[in-house]
Length: 120
Image (cartoon, rainbow, N blue to C red; front, side, top):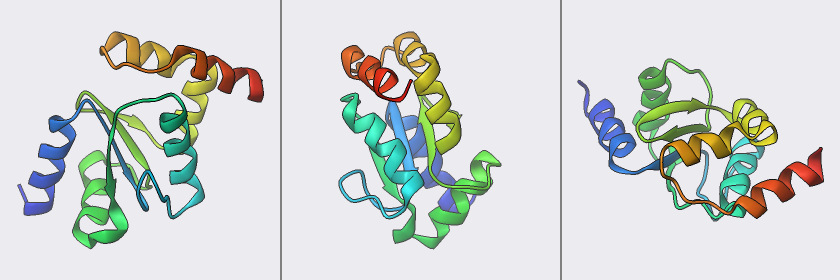
């Protein structure tokens, strides 16, 4: 396992929810990362963010780790969930709520419902 792969694996397994993104949850650096971070922030999810722009090894390594070509990438309890489009769809369908519930991840259910109402 490469150094980057080891660091990614430890990060993914070390937090319940991890978002590999461009920028940070406080200051996303691309629209797709901003959308996913915005959903998680609004729902009050406690998550770790990894700024892929700050480390080229991680930026490429996360794509190899997941076999997924784009960033952002969301992991819940060590499992790759998806990128922006998938997270958006899961938020709108309620699947993300179910995944959080099934994995014991706390979030604001009212906020999740408001997202669906505002975009439904």
